[in-house]
Length: 116
Image (cartoon, rainbow, N blue to C red; front, side, top):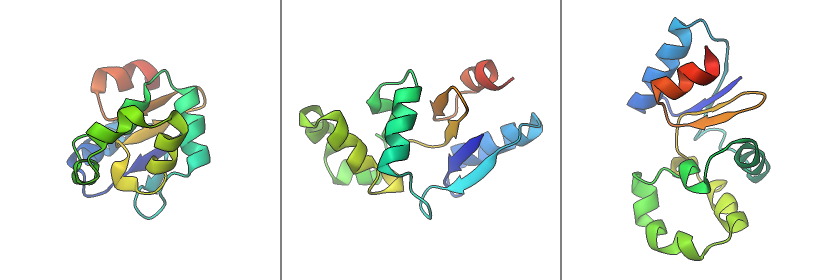
C-alpha cells in the first residue's frame, strides 16, 4: 500500500500512527518531494469511488490563493488532474492507495472499513 503524506500535517501524522498501531504495512511518500503525477492521479481517481473534489485540499492556502473555488467548476476533469499534478499542496492528504481502493483524508471509520 502507498501512503502519500506531508510530514508537517497533523492529520497525516495521526494517520501514520494509526497505520503503525494496526500493523499495516505501507510504503511512505512525501507529497512535496515526490508530487503525484498526472498519470497516478488519473489512475487513483478512476480506481476510487470519490468525486474529483475529494482529491483537492480545499482548505489549503494554495487552493485559496489560486481562487480554485471559483475556477474549478469551469475546468474539465483532465484540466483539474493536470493542475493537481503541479503542486502537492493542492492534493488532499493523506492519500492511501491500495490494490482496489483509494482514500483521501483520514477518517478512522472509513479506514477501518477498508484496511482492517
